[in-house]
Length: 256
Image (tube, rainbow, N blue to C red; front, side):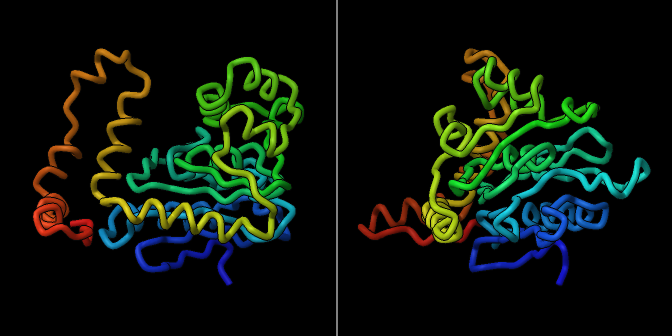
C-alpha cells in the first residue's frame, strides 16, 4: 500500500498518511503524493470536502523525514502551504478537516493547522520541537502558530519546544473537538457530513473570502470583491437554491 492513500467516499476525499512505522514522517515520495492529492481535490468538482488523517495511534505526523538527509526532496505540500523548504504554495480551495492523534509536531502540526477544522483524539500532543533540536529554517509552522494560538502560548511552544495536550489545545481554540481515539474517525465523518450538507460552491467562496483578507483591516475586507463569490452567483447551485425555495423543498446541490 502507498504511504499516502487517496480515496473517495461520495463527495468526500480522504488523504491518509500510511507510514506508522516512521510516525508518518513525510518523505519526498509522500510529499509528491500529497501535492497530487491536493491538486486533484482542487480540480475535481465532485469533491466537496477533504479529510486528512493518519495511520496508527502513536502519531498523526512528526513532520519531514530527516533520515533522508539534507538533500531530501520534500516541499512539504501541506494543503494550505509549505514549511518553506521550496516548491509551490498550495492553497486548498475546498474545506479540509484534519483528524489528529498522538504526536502532531513540527511539519505535522503545520499540516493540521492548514485544515479548516481539527478533530483531535484525546491522545494528541501538539508541539514545535525545532529549536530544541537546533533546527530552524523558513518554517511555515511558526507563522501559523502565532496566528492560530494566543501570542504567549505560541511563543512558549516555539521557544521551549514543549508540547501541549489535546485538552489544552481545545482550551486555546486550536482544535474544534476532542474525542476518544476510538471515536476519531466517526466524529470526523460527522463533521464532513455537516459540511457537505451546505452548498459546496458557497463554501468555497466563503473560505476564499474569509482567508483572502485575513491579514487586512476590516474596512479593506468589507470593501473587497471576491471572484469566487461572483462566480457562485452564476452557478447551478444558486438556481437550485431559488427553485427549492419556491417549491418548498430541500435543495439538491451539485457543486456546479
